Amino acid sequence: MYVCGKNVAREYLNSNEKILGAYLLENYNEQDILSKLRSKTNNIKYVKRNELDRMTRENHQGIILKVEDFNYSDIDVLKQDDALVVILDHIEDPHNFGAIIRTCEAAGVTGIIIPKNRCVEVNATVIRTSVGATKYVPIVMVTNITNTINELKKDGFWIVGTDMDGEDYTKIDYKGKTCIVIGNEGYGMSDLVRKNCDFIATIPMKGQINSLNASVASGVIIYEAVRQREL
Image (cartoon, rainbow, N blue to C red; front, side):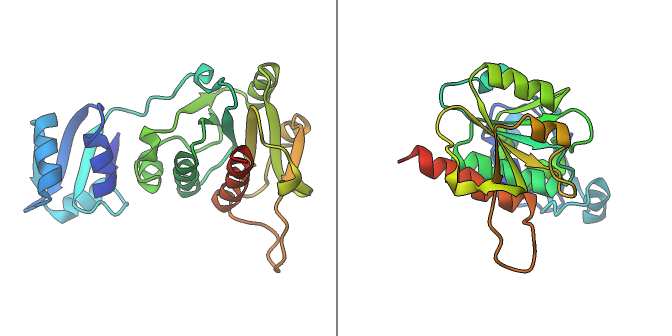
């Protein structure tokens, strides 16, 4: 897998992750990155900008790293006392996913669960949008979201779904083991997932637009959960 950008590169270079290779813009001169990179790999190539542009559509900032594919976590790492988990019910936009990961890392969320099918995976765009937060937030990929919700319920989790037709999100208790479910950008949560939620949280809308971007909505509810837990 290829990842790019100065901030993402710094996160990888400051971690224990293996760097398989690097492609740098000719005359690249970020000395802090170069010194760490040289200690991680001998496979460094200096190339012209058009070659970097062919490798990625992202703003690479003159650096692309070749790294191992993302390593997903096991669900057991999320089964902690007072865990706060975010479940993404078929999020498709990598920029939304990356932004949600970044919020989760900032808020101290225990981890994220995504389904194996019909959901964006952790790819270069997600990693870059998260600004390297994928290094610090456990992400679990499961075969079936509904089965996973039922498994978590047996472990003592409360499941809070999100939808326009529900209860004011500030009135719900997020203390204790809690999962917040964020639905797909277009059609929201699936019917089966909704039926298995214990609560449905709604963010009141006062303007003419009747919904928020998935990453914005998740941030609002995640930080309400964090606020309540700190009381």
